[in-house]
Image (cartoon, rainbow, N blue to C red; front, side):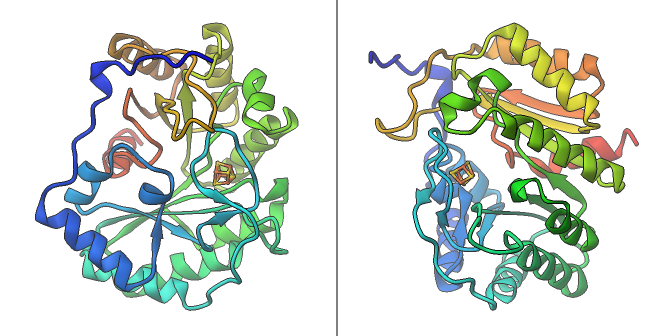
Length: 288
Ligand code: SF4
C-alpha cells in the first residue's frame, strides 16, 4: 500500500515550554495516563503548554482492537481504586478549570468501569467545584445501566465518539451494528438531559454523502457538539490514510455541521475530540 505524503498544514507544535515538562512530571508522579500520550495525539505540545490534558482512567490497555487506534491492546490491569484521588490531585496541582476524562474500553468489567467514572467525577465536583467536567465514555456494550451511573454523577458534557461513517465501521474493526449502538447511547444520554458531544475522523475512505448522513444521524440523536479532525496513521501497522482533507474542506464541514443544527463544532486538520474542549463548551453555553 502506497502511503500518502503528509501535507504541510498538519505540522503540530513540538513540546518545548516549561509547562509541558511540569505536566509530564505531575502525571508521572501520580502514575496517571493520558490519551494525549497513549493515543499519540499530535497536539500534545500545545495542549500541555496550556496545562490541559485528557486523563485516561481504568489503565492504559484496551480490551478492543480498533484498527485506527494507538492505545495498547490486550488484557488490562486490575482496577486501581485509588485512581480517582490521583486524578483529583493532578487536577488541583494543575489548577484546572476544565477537566476531560476518558478511558480505555473495559469489556472485562461487569459495569465497564462506570463506577470509577462516577467516583472520579463526584470527587472532583465535591473538592474542586470550580472545574467543569467532560467525560468521553466507551459504548458500555450498549447497556443503559453503566451509562446512567456515569450520568448520575452529573458531568457537564457527556461525550462519545462515533469516529466514522457506518460504511467504514468494518474497516476499523467494529461491527456495523456498533455505529447504531453508539448513536443510541448518545440518544439515551440526551433523553436524560445531558449535553452531548461526539467526534469524527475523516480520511479513512468515507464518501462525502456518507459523511453528511453521519452528521444527520448525530443530530437526530440529539448530539449538541461535534469535533471533526483528520485521521493520522499512528504507525505503519494501523489503517493507512486514504485522503488528506484541506483546511478549506474542514471549513466547509464546519458550516455543514452548523447548518444542521449543532450548537457548536470544531473542524480542522488537527482537531481531536478534546482539543480546545473548554472553548467548545463555552461556545455552546453562550447559545443555550
Ligand atoms: S475502544 Fe477506544 S481505546 Fe479501545 S481500541 Fe477502540 S478507539 Fe482505542
